[in-house]
Length: 252
Ligand SMILES: C[S@@+](CC[C@H](N)C(=O)[O-])C[C@H]1O[C@@H](n2cnc3c(N)ncnc32)[C@H](O)[C@@H]1O
Picture 1 (cartoon, rainbow, N blue to C red):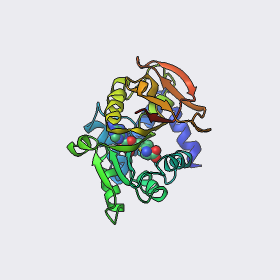
Picture 2: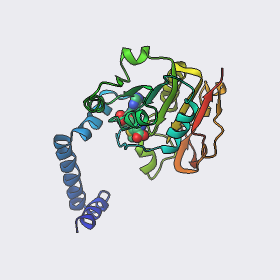
Picture 3: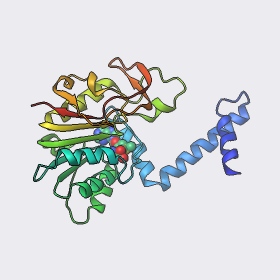
Picture 4: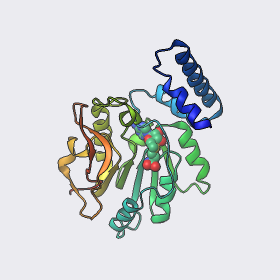
């Protein structure tokens, strides 16, 4: 019964009848207020997006352990000859990606970076043995980090509204310029021969100014067709689905 009622009230958002619109608004903002008070994760996403506006990409912090086994396995293979590979999880959320990478590569030094303070507190709380390093995206410590053998940017450079808005012809929530600024900073932190791993992005890595220094890694599942809008450097949609490569190797 709960779902049909929720769907019905949602459908009243643009109703011709003022009372129906009022019921929708009261329910919508009432629920929003309750979540803001009761749910620390939701509060961090909402407050953080406001506090760091202009720097944010994906606001939701959803993640899970071993979310990208193919990408993690390819990176493990690539780093097999390194005694102590240094890895960066950019947009690490509450740390599952970092802890998963530590299982694939127990010898690795792993740094997690996020823009959400609550996520970073969660990462540090879970890292009982203090094996990993966590930085805020806008910290001096992150700026100083360098010499990575692999950088993961998974489900960071996207914005949910671009997938859910009925008219998604122009990117909202973030811009190509913001994306490229982050990519160039990350490029400077990656060693030649290192891997740049990017998945679920609204923009193309190959459109950025550093792309000429990279070639796609040659492995069977590097390109997977995804239903995910893709935007060009002018922030206009160029496709509703794409199979952009997910792993690139930085040339020497
Ligand atoms: C959906 S989660 C992805 C988590 C994990 N990488 C995964 O794929 O499971 C997106 C994360 O990106 C973070 N984020 C958004 N904008 C960011 C930015 N400019 N710099 C660093 N992290 C950012 C969010 O706070 C959030 O934790």
